[in-house]
Image (cartoon, rainbow, N blue to C red):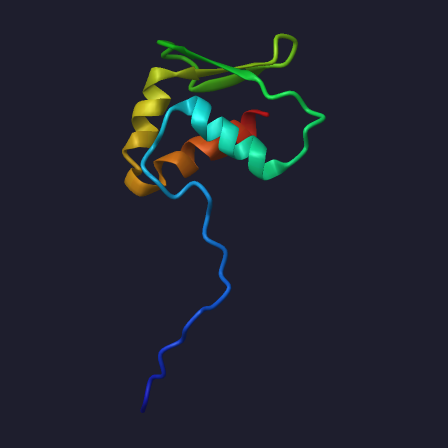
Length: 92
């Protein structure tokens, strides 16, 4: 039985596949990729909150992120920015 190698061409590379940069850079990349300039980009506030990993405060347009969440995202290595982008997308 012969097994032929399969080459996948044209597969999109996920835009956040890199070691975690600053949360602001991850959010900027997420917003520039999204392309909708009508929705204002929120500010990011990092807190030492042990109860909540992340929260979006709609009235003040702020994403609150815990330091622990950022530490956990860093454990994903090359996918750390993707993990943080996922959290931001969920919160927004």
